[in-house]
Image 1 (cartoon, rainbow, N blue to C red):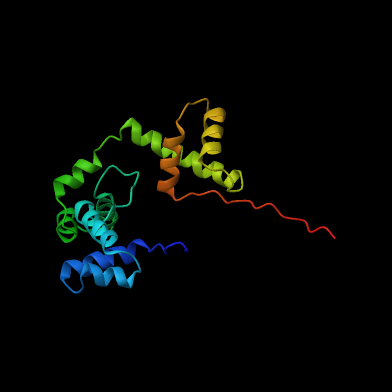
Image 2: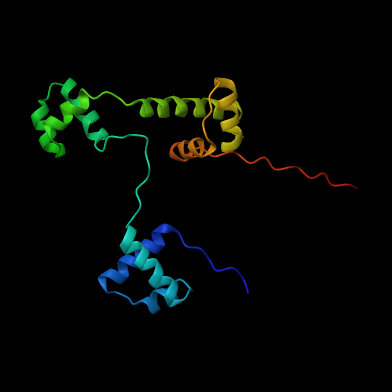
Length: 171
């Protein structure tokens, strides 16, 4: 018996939303994606409980993009009040963000992200998170955990390029 096909997150979310709208039942969805009714029911339960997971980010501020937009248009000569009204953000929130002091953890994350991208390009994109941790700790005299470096690499979207061994045909 072959392996069951794995479906992307989009297909699973679409199936759960179809069920919510009442277009199709669990058995119909199971037939479409070639699985059992119980698996679909479990997926739908997890979807209801967790929802769509958000992508992680280094930014600790929710509306960072909106505040940067306000800065950009403020330099062009527009009033902060009008820009905030259009972007549906509060003016006080913008000024609070502008005068915000970055925590040490956020500064450390930014520093490590720059080191990770630098080492990633320096070592020809072959370092996985374990070796990346080893190089960062050794060259910078630090002691960061592998899990911490792995999480930052995931946030940056950096993965190692796998080098395949070339087989030489014997004649």
